[in-house]
Amino acid sequence: MPACRRRLGSKNKGGLSFTVALFGVFLVGCLAVSTVHAQEATRALKLQASPSSGGHVMGSGQVYLVYLGWLDVETRSAIVTRLQANNIPYTEVTSWAEYDRLIWGVSGPPPKNAVVIFLTGEYIPWDPSAFSDWKSLFLKIGRNVRDYGWLLMNEGGYTFYYAVKPDNTVTRTGEDGYNTMMSVLPGASASQWGPSGGHDVSESLTQTGRTALNLVSGSASSSYLEGRPTTWKGVTLMASYCAAGAYLGASSVRFGSGALFTMGWGMGKVQRGDVIVAAAMHIGSSWSYLSGATVRISALPASGFAFSSWSGSGTGSYSGYSNPATIVMNSAISESASFVTDVEIRFQLSGVHSDAEGAVIIIDGASYSYQQLPRSYTWKVGSTHTIDANSLVTGGSGKRYVWKSWSNADQIKSQTIEVTRAITYMAVFRTQYLLTVNSPVGNPQGSGWYDEGSTATFSVTSPSPTEGLLGILGSKHVFDHWSGNSSVTTANASITMDGPKAVIAEWRADNTMPFVVSTMIAAALAVLTILAKRRGREPLSPEARALLQPVAARYGEYLARLERLKAEGFISERVYQRLRSEYQKKMG
Image (tube, rainbow, N blue to C red):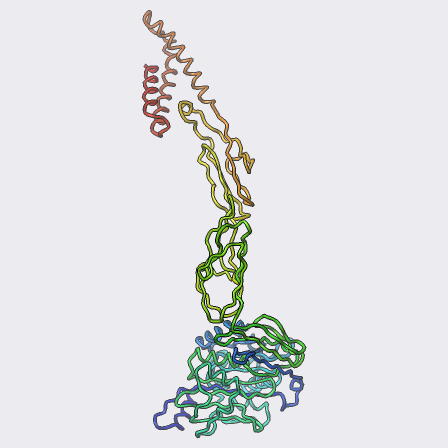
């Protein structure tokens, strides 16, 4: 905003340094011009706080954030943070097509009572394909303020001072840009800088302007070095001013249902966001809306207070406990927000039943069981308290409750809370059941705790070798079926955990291999006995030798198997030595 700095510098000699920032309110009503839209009826909305010291109340139409290349990122962040903190919905306009539709409307007129916030500084986006020249654009925006109740806001600098095209070509419109927009009201024009002098224009500030100043610790009663009023038919539409090198100006005299707010560069980004949102939301004041407009109302408690409820009157009003809430301007409406200093804090359980044993949650160091909940407290707004929950709560044999979160999905189990409003803290638990898998052999798997309704898998290894001599000879256990809470016949199985479960693996013995081996050994022994009797009488015949060869080979296999069993730890050293000696004798 070089022009502003040059003019201020030329009028404030003697070393005064001005960080320029402008926050003014240009209230442009629909009373002065006779058009189709200007004749549309308006409905008054009166917002008040009870008690008045309890907080602020505010209302707004749909909020639009406009930025097309010339974005002030920090200010956008400050404004978005403020909107989100107050649960205020907004639409971001980031394309030229969206921008043109906002200005012209889609399948009808532009939106009523829209809050349009330019995040483009002094640069107003201008699409030559929609407007042949920048004056046509500025006039259309002025008519939207006048005829559709727009609240037009500029995050920094002198709004309408430049027009910027999609190719970033900039046209300096200067003071003529502002006067063009204002020309939709006959006789409304003024110098953006106004006369110099020691004017004290604090009396021009409305409650909105004062509230906006309070947000940035500005004073609404200081003496200002320079005041710059803009008037229309004797009514001050804008009053901005510089004070001792810092620009703190704000005013909000309003006409009809439309307004223009601008702010200067000197304010900090976050402070600028606070002020512009505070003003956009019409804090603590009455406002006129077009008939049928949808308005979102919000209550912001002061320190030490909490919102309690709305009490509304008029067709389309709201009464209840939601904050924010939505009303429709079908008539004149009055809404009162009730604020309180003491609120009810309630604690209750979810997912826990009467079989829970012992303490479940801890409040300010005191433990409470299922039977002692829910319970309520009346606590002062701003007071702090500690809350906690037991991680595991027994629910009888094979059942337990596991802490999951607080009802707001907060995963921090133990914490210190500050009381800001009436609220219910719900400790959410999930139920788990125990699965017991029993089997004397086969390395059973799957025992443990499972969430209610989940599917648990369990298994055994089959076949499983038999212990002792039979195992050495190849005897084994073979899985047959499950018993207990399952009758499945496969070694790997699953079960739905809708309660505590126990399954038992049932086995059968397979002695086929020991029988074969013992038969072969008996046959071999018989042959060896016959041969031993004849050994002293005559040499072995070729037929006998042929018969003995497979026997010796078989015992060689037995010996090899014996060595493996010994190496794998299935037989003791004593058994190993005895069998090894016997096999070697048989082979000898």
